[in-house]
Amino acid sequence: MASDTSISDRSASLARRFFAGVEHHLRIIGALILREMATRYGRRGLGFAWIVGEPLIFCFGVMILWSFTKSPYEHGIRLAPFVMTGYMSLIMIRHMISLLSSALQSNLGLLYHRRITPMHILSARICLELAGSTSAFLIVYLVLLSIEQVSLPFDYLLLYQGWFTLAWVASGLALVLSGLAMRFEVFERMIGLISYAMIPLSGVFFMVSWMPPAAQKIYLTIPFVHCVEMIRAAVFGEFVVTHYDPLYPVIWGACLNIAGLLLIAGAREHMASD
Image 1 (cartoon, rainbow, N blue to C red):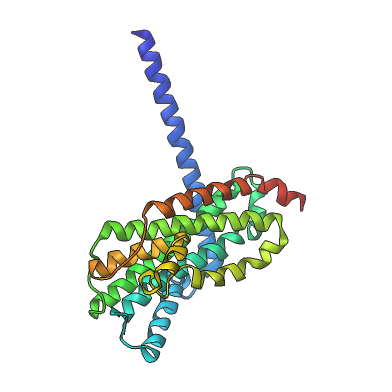
Image 2 (cartoon, one colour):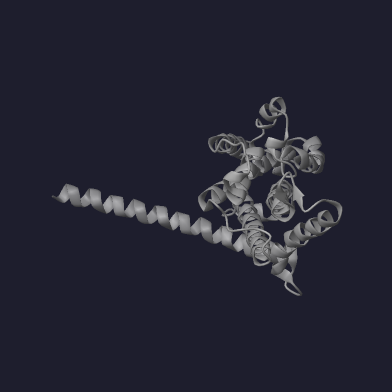
């Protein structure tokens, strides 16, 4: 009886220590998010609203420009929701890459605090960018819904899965590029080029079904394409042909995130030696 009580006490103690550790890390990440918001957007004027306002301006700008240069329908798909699903996805991918790749270099001073690790800084930026992009996507969707340019999603779970899988893969690629940039100067200079390469490689401005069958197989080797196709399948429904494998980008994202974490594991020592 005493042995059972001892085991129960030890289990409870381990659980308390685990949750206390999680709470400690969440407090650090939360504080870094507030610091990042204040330093990036300031405390006056629109301030924090730019987290959502910046992607909104770009997305609506592209919609307005395309409305003057293209027909209202693209391959039978209404232009506004097509731009929304594509451009909001592109914004999140490019912001993840650009913001995470410079996260450690721009916050080098914080690493002198023993309680702050590179993963705290990177996690704060990932959470901040995901929150901003998701909020902007929701607002754009609601605006288009109010003017009857888009209907409610046909599959909410698929929409969530596509969007968060896209963030999973984008953060993994960003972590890999961040780790490589800290070790090789050439990668730091190539971040901008890689970010621009995401425009044709992510499949945001056309659909897989518009391509020849041979090209479709090649294009579907890119994990981002599956995520964007999932988002469009959820928004447009079964009346639009889409091609995706839900597990493929998840596996790619896991590999990229693990590789990125391994590259960043020695970041403190590497950056200190520089």
